[in-house]
Length: 368
Image (cartoon, rainbow, N blue to C red; front, side):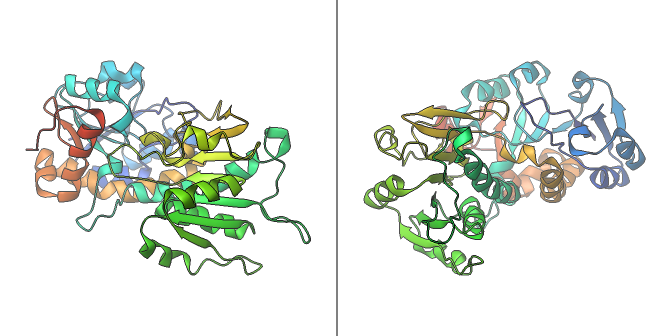
């Protein structure tokens, strides 16, 4: 088969969807790999490295999208919709639950679109989403700490505090991969850290997190009262709620935001799926924050894109095994592999992922 790797065009997206070792493995199996010129530049991977691995460097996205399989990092942007076509297999992050326009474009073009974020192991794990969630969780605290600085509109709070002065308070809603990684960084900075989740069993993963001064994570079971009290006390709120394929439930209302501390910061990592904060909306690295009722909101939808070198290798470590299956067997790989089948969102002009269909209010059709 022919695998195409376009250059990412989303705002400040520096990642590339394949690295030279992956190219080499695909070539050893007899597949061709087309890389758009300078696709790896933002991740410090020059075209020459791809050439040495056996890739063909092409000059335009039109050429790349003629491939049998196109592998990307982020969802196709509107200017790329014209490249979508019948018979194309697309393998990338999609987050269709809040993107009706993209979903319609994929179905209209009869694209077989496999979303990284819904590739799910039989036991319930999300192997491709996990490393990006780890990175986003760590970055969420870094970004929140940055915008808490007074010069950037925040309250002027140092999360770790100093002796004799209270620490900054961090509230993390969700104890999944994002939440656990965010908690690790928050505790490491010395912040007073609270994690809320509806499943107390998840708190066991937090028991070993201890900061340099002996700080430990506090935990609460999710309910309206605990969320409200904690949100009103925090300086930094991190939304780390995720439901595979579906729209994120809104746990922080507009009314509650209006009562939060002025100059506090919200970083909603779930913004790609709609976010758990009613007032959040997608932002970009170019224009990352906006204010509602005196509270700063950070809603960047491709957070790991600012650390592309780390993100690229973490991502391709987990996508390559699935890509090799798709390259070797095509649609038969999806039929045979439950994880890939769970990842398939659109096929044959239909929505074939139940959770996404319900989120969009569109008809669901089972695959195959």
